[in-house]
Length: 493
Image 1 (cartoon, helix red, strand yellow):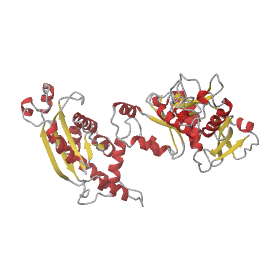
Image 2 (image 1 turned 90 degrees about the horizontal axis):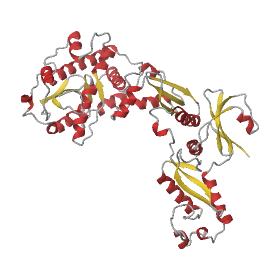
Image 3 (image 1 turned 180 degrees about the horizontal axis):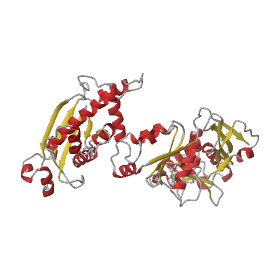
Image 4 (image 1 turned 90 degrees about the vertical axis):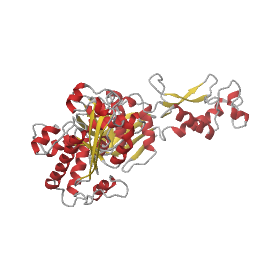
């Protein structure tokens, strides 16, 4: 089902202008099955130039209902429908704002008949509603009134559906059952999408149009179609060619389709989407390499829309220090540019880091006070209940206590100090190499099937070196917890 909607307003800014008239025509894919139209009292004066354009005067709306009085009707009529309009962003943004003012999140899939017309009726001198209807023979009575414009848009939409059913051909054997099910799902509960099920050709064309309507306006659909279904990193570029976002995926094509599958709502997200003019990519073969390379690129390039990851995706961690008495002290704290220490493990926030340390204290019988979890000038709480052996009051020697600290560290450090992760490459004849030496990440590279290595130095010669940091350590540590198909770990020492 489709809700074809047109609004008249006091101006062009949803944040400051209001709706003066609304019209809704419900289309089942074959014909108009329901309609509703009403003037609305905007609660403010209508500017003279708007009255001149629409013919709607202040007197005409003085006794009209206010939006909150018709809001329920709008929700019920459009429930389960695709929101269709000529220049859909204008009408949709105004309705979103009116509902937001009432504390309600109004959300619908959207379809723009301007973009659909450009795709299906190319070469028109103008795609404004009035000119387009005139050029293709659609009657438009009551121009710049909601009911007249919405009715004309509904007739245009029906014509576009007819064009798709007559001219679009699906490849032989295409399975359209899932698409038809999605159309049925759009209908209100207990109703079919239409008395006559839409043809697969029509459904496919309209669904394609919906996807294209959600595409960044500066981005050519052919760019997305050419994306590889393979593992790697990808770059979003603006019109000037600058990289504004870096991402990674095991399937670049599917991941970028997901980026654009949601009709963004926030101003910042819309600004980002509208800035995307091109996409490039680099294949990595290995998921681990993609993760490591993405982290490096974000910190090196500092793309405008990767702000959350520029410094660290793991802004807290567990640290090791030794006090004047020789006790090794684990501590949790912030992990950022102001802290030059490399944490033993980096975590998502300080709350998670604190909980992680509590777990290690309990498991390895460490002292809460020495780990910064119990602030006191005397013994820690665990000492009082006989769980702490007395390091906090000098009863346990540093040598004895530090053995358990070392065990705790071993449990959260890399399993092996020097090792190589050998994974899939960018082709069947290639392998990826990730090198960790003496507990520090050294970098990654690629080798062909003729490569053989007997010692660590052999691998060192085939990698490109990259900087180690807390994010990199966490990426490797998390990756090693799950065995990947086609990967193996070669340990040295």
